[in-house]
Length: 374
Image (cartoon, rainbow, N blue to C red):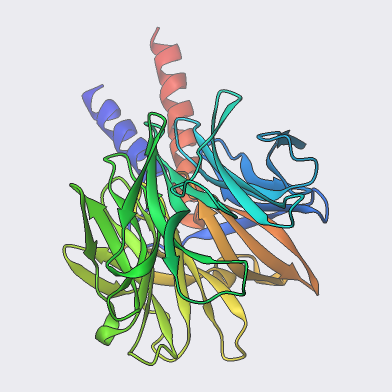
């Protein structure tokens, strides 16, 4: 019996263990909810978030759920972030009766929405965009301030836009790296914030904000950079120009004080857009014809997603948007000239299927032995 338990345990471990460096395979499911819908996030339950007919919305079990976060009859907006605890950051944008465009950021939880307000206190176009939210309900994004900057037509003064954090009903200005503008893109469970800010030379640079301080993350060869996301382990992803000219930009992951190129290639643009809690990174890069191709980066290896789906299905995976903690990927894709939003679902490797079948057979054999012994 001891041998039997050990053998069964070994096979069970083998059934559910995935080799660390095995190339993943994916099935592709088209999401067809209408021409006026746009989905950019997928949570751990597989629910999609984005916009429907200009309103913030979600999609699950074949149904679109519109979120009426404001009284605007015809906004342009959508969900920008959702935490694992179900807190939602969104925005709506519209033109007022005075012909001033305006955007509002919102925090939604359990069906109740709160308007975030703005860093600025008056005047026109008090724009606020909510870009990220964590489980504690802290929202980050960008908002217009009262700081005047040069330029703009007469009667329409220009104001600086700064990164902000919103918590417990209060909005706080995170400042810049010495320049005029900044924007916060994401926040993790520990409250660490990442985004992009201008330095004193008017150059955009990726930043990390923690312990009340904004720090420049640097860039490849002194080029500009931006940060798109951070996970709870503190891994930061984004994009940096290869040099000061900014002609080619490469996807990166930042860890232990250093930027690492994800390896798409130094001659073509790439961007890392989302990272899950397993450290899996998705993004996209330009091919030889300048067309986007989606990729996943894990265990130090980059894989073009086109090569991880059934080749006979003729899918071309384009821009990627979101990956959840189960490895489901939300992306744009084309098949025989028809394009749309798709969900890529990981499927077991052929050897994994074989181990599962072998394991099930052994379990059945052991069950029969126990029945005969009883």
